[in-house]
Image 1 (cartoon, rainbow, N blue to C red):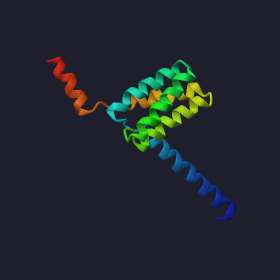
Image 2: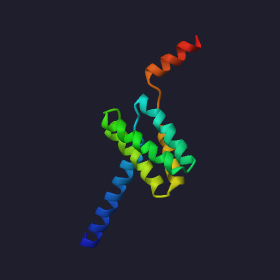
Image 3: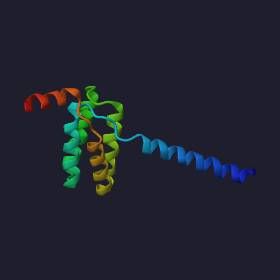
Image 4: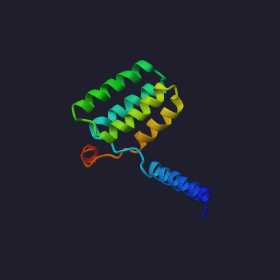
Amino acid sequence: MTTKKSEVLVTWLATVTLALLVVGCGPPQAAPQNQQLIASLRTAISARNSQWLEKNAEVLEKRYAEGKVSDAELEAFQAIINRARAGKWEQAEQEVLAFQKAQRPTQEQIDRVTKGAR
């Protein structure tokens, strides 16, 4: 195989691998106490309100400093916030919606709902 073909193949494989990692690794599962932050961020982004966006960023940083937000959650939130800060509101809105839809109820939340239904 020629050097040029090898370089193209390596570049293609690297691109495919990166794409699979990104697609395969959806938004993280947020801790129950951080799911409200997702909703608040979604509101700020859908309203295109920079002040609300920055308030969410402050709350996120505080919760992270207190150990209430994981590294994966922080990364997901910050990516969305940074996209909105860059003026890419529609893309940020799609991402925060995907983040919110990826959340699953904990057993405690399920129990709370089912106890109320009895």
